[in-house]
Image (tube, rainbow, N blue to C red; front, side, top):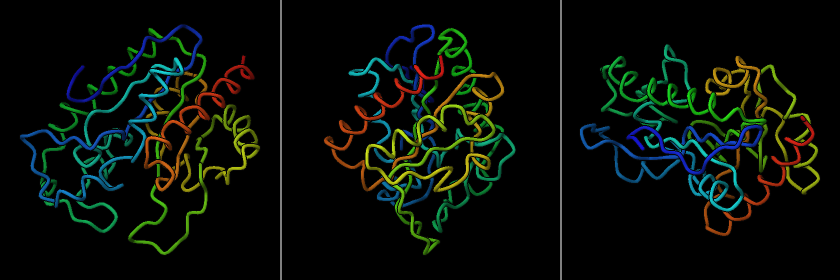
Length: 238
């Protein structure tokens, strides 16, 4: 589709669509981040498991997906254009030397703006009844001793409509559910603020704990569960 995003599936008006901002660890060949290879497979580079789950949701559960195709270390697509972490000089205690002195405007023009322009156009054409925003989080940050016991978090800013329906549904599945945890959607919610809240579109922001998103079995389980929950939320919102 492009070096910035790809689409799977065709949206139906009034249906559910999915957005995965941090699904990829891809780094263009002409950008050298200056970090060890193994860091590209850790949480600082991507939301582990989200790409596979998004693909399954699109291919098996008829929830079309707009999926990022570039690592958050190159350009964080879920940050405001002015955010310091848009081109992160460090992440969870790891310096990113290739981003020191990087041309922010070039990264914005090459990655951030095309991603969000395409997403805006896709959503305008799709006219969805619900947007499912999919992320994952590390069980423990290197820079913090705080435990993160939640298996799934539901994030939101001002629009709580979908969250209030989803939280008890997820809890009824036996999950430890974070209500605007492990961090608050009032602090980090750029994509949904821009494309959902500002446009009046209902959305369900989901964070999955990464030790539960490792294997194909994990991916299949979460895709089925999230499809069921999203469908029930969408029905309740109608």
